[in-house]
Image 1 (cartoon, rainbow, N blue to C red):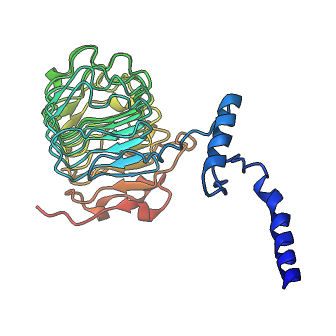
Image 2: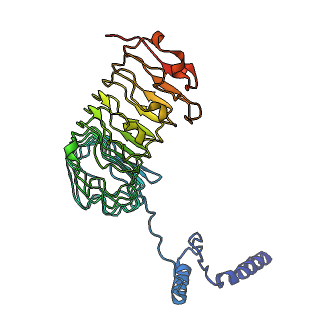
Length: 371
């Protein structure tokens, strides 16, 4: 029995050095305290504080802000179809695309987009916006695409971002484009402003000054002629669904770089001889649904013209040289589309040589004429 007690005492004394060991030193967040009384941990923190390496209490993780009801992901904030009456708060500052379409927003205030300097595209389509603060767009130093269609605007907003490349503002109530409206917008490439009650008199001289547009659409308006002083840089000009009655000699003289011209669904009866000679690079010409009684003069001299829409007019006769030049080598590109259906011309009365510069006979579209 005595020997048994001795062994027990020796075992206890052998464990004694462990209690005299230094306390555990916590070196990282994931090194949890081993000493149950916590004294060792406090000693370590005090020593670390003296050494300038005290562990700070970890802050709670930050969750990105997102306006209530919206969907935020990958720098895209989608707040469409929510019945919003104003621009929501707490939009993340790193947002690239903000979708606010199909709401009930009536006004853009000065600080609605504060802090959104990284915004690339903004959609405000289909709201009820009638008022825009002059400084509403100031924070958007990198905005390139602004979609403002289907609102109640009576004028194009002021102080648009200089970085803007594309503006779509059709289906509003704009009646006037004042001088200097687009000043400072040298990067602008595309403007879609159809569906506004614009008349020719609504464009003040200098309205498009400074712009180097490639694309301009002023369709579904109240134009009676081609507007003056549009940008000379245009590659595409769409004036369809207006009330244009004639194309006079100088109307197209500025637009030598045009590739596509849309004049369909107007009231055009006459295209003055020589008018089309100002368009040496034209590839596509839309004159459908007008009141032309003959093929416009000058088509054979248009070296690159490939597509001509002439359907739904009053054309009753087609001459053998109306489309193609008499000599070979003049035309650089053959036609790949000529539409002539819904005209009172009889296709069997048209000489086959009339389409000698057409790439394929299937490219010619005749059809029955119904009075």
